[in-house]
Image 1 (cartoon, rainbow, N blue to C red):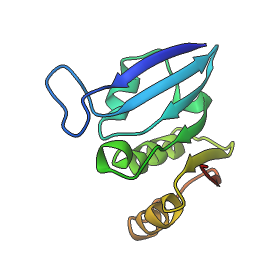
Image 2: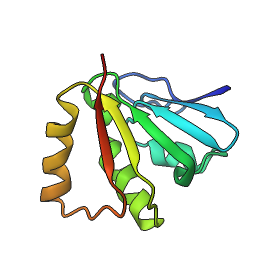
Image 3: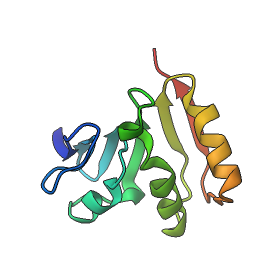
Length: 118
């Protein structure tokens, strides 16, 4: 298993470090821990494909851990993803994300499976 740090700059990005994101990968399959703003740009510079992303684990709902999530989900839909995506996080993750999906008319091509951490 490999770790790939996609961002380590906490609440504010810097010129050389993105906000929070860590990939755990095993072969082509991988899991994302936290999804800060700009994660998609970091993914484009990595060997990781959103098509092979199995789950996203959100540690808590501070913005530097979740603001990149709606955009990543939308991009995965545009790439034609069909397999379900597991989202693990605090109980508030689903009520946070559902209105964003609804109000921005984000049309997902795959189901989200919410699981509560704990």
